Length: 107
Image (tube, rainbow, N blue to C red; front, top):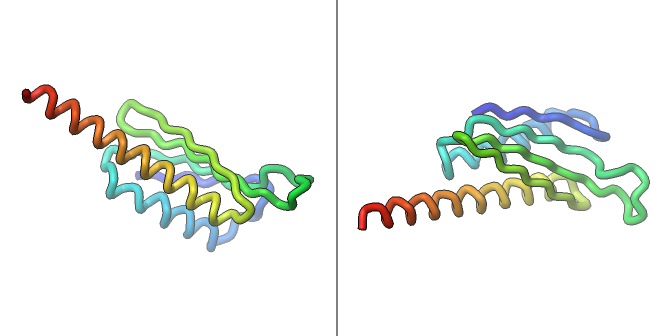
């Protein structure tokens, strides 16, 4: 699996890069079909009334499918966690639907 990380409005630090890579690599156990994940992290906008709002976007390419998830939070790490959690749920749902299709075909 290849993970590409881009930054918008935040500096690229080894800590952020390591965190994103760790969280996205953990998805590999849910589906070995993941080929590529493009992750963009950054500030939603600089002049938000509530303070800084961070955003994480991920585009995951599976065998023939593309999944896009976009989440924001007041903490960059929480936004990354939200994206990872939603991708995990999506992968679990896909796996469940696939197993249901396979069991329907055998009946």
